[in-house]
Image 1 (cartoon, rainbow over the protein chains, first blue to last red):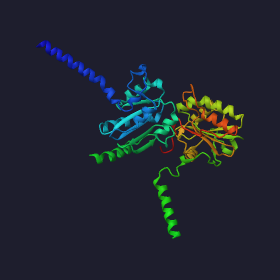
Image 2: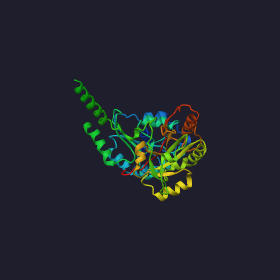
Image 3: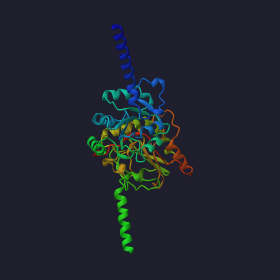
Length: 185
Length: 197
């Protein structure tokens, strides 16, 4: 009987461990199909995406989708990040919120995850490495010059609701999110 | 009848303008548009005009920043391009429209990196006029100040292996009398820090 309990405890521990390992994978669901991260980068929780991954990432899945494009070398991006983390905490579960870094690929397991950890950012995090930045920028928005940061909010149907090139004003984003979410309540 | 139609047309036109937030936006400075002469002080305080600095075969107005790491990564390439094409009649004018960067900072950065004048765009007047929003961002005008190319310098901010040298290709095409096939290209960079933002 005592032996059985130990076996059950061991099995439970194994299941919990396996679940813990699967959480980051679930959190990274958007844009995952076209990931081309090398095994060297597998240790980072920041996922590399290409143009196809970007297209997938910009497609809402039955929820409003907030996307922030940023880079560690961009001062206003770093300055606005605490507000983004706040928004993520406030709207968790009600919206999808992802961040896409435009840092060099070499930073995918260095400065990018380091900064996100410092910020305690829990949003799924990607790093875009497109063959053609010009095409990627045009795909995101015809209005976009490539200046960072950029934040876009789409409704659940994929319609652009909010577009901000430059630092966001957190109350404005809250207002747009609340307008989107109230009809659903 | 004619009067009614004219009023209706005016109302519709105004509606389209009001409903479209980008209509009339400074960002609409299109290829083929002529830039009026303008004057701004350089880092030494001397007022310089476009027509005074422009080259006999054209001018590049390039938005710069003393702080932006992307601009820093491009500085050597910008200087090289400016040196290579000055002898071919294309002059460069740098513009700093970032209200967050002090004159001393911009001055020392310009002295360190560029042999062409860097003008101070206080109040981001020229940035607004051209719709510039990122650094580095280049506008290449012909000898009559008509915009031929707008956007990125090349397609590799690391500088390791650019496969498309947009600006250089635009220079070479126009200097040889050929059309510029790609007259618009964007690249990731730093946002221009405008007054009030």
